[in-house]
Image (tube, rainbow, N blue to C red):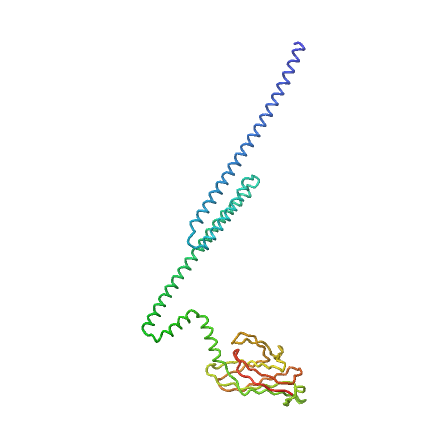
Length: 324
């Protein structure tokens, strides 16, 4: 074989090897591209399915909520607000679906979207049931009112003299709670145990421990206040508490918490009233003498003092006395 033929054969071999390499590369590239195309097709199908599922769920939810609308304007407003919220959620999930990098997030949000729509439907159903119950209760009340009005009218026709009393009865029914409060205050006031023979004197303690009555403010150590309870059959027997309030010439209540002072609430106007001391008494519906000893360890001011006795939040008696 000549040298020329050998060179041609070598060149042919090189060309064949190059062609085989090119074919191999092209085949490898085609396989990879086919895989990529298949992957993209799968992703496209997945996103289309998710988008279709989202659209179906969204429009089904809108339809369900729309069917639950009624003549109740407040309920309809809530439904419309929920529909707007669902639209916002749907648009946000659609953006996630279009961005293939967020498909897992889109799946999670789609599941939450389904839960949210179910929650909204349950909430509206609950509100509808509550509204129906309220409407039923209003119907019953209206019927009861109609029956009551009819009965009152019959009573008026039967006896004209009872018309005023019947009108008062209707007013009392319309303000039942106020009547109960008023009745409670009336009973409370009726059971107040009045006191009489209120006396207040200043005293000085001798070295022997005995008390010596004094009227000079600068020398007394304390005040002794006595009073007598009156008979009140409404009050009944049992423990009764009497609050003693001593007001000095400056208009201030003598009060030291460590000595039993505090604050009571007026049953007449709910005002807070400071008191000096209190005494509990086993009341037996008969006159009883009570004594309160106030020894604050402070100097008293000269002038006119006022003593007020309270029972059940009401003023049960009062008197005045003077210290020089």
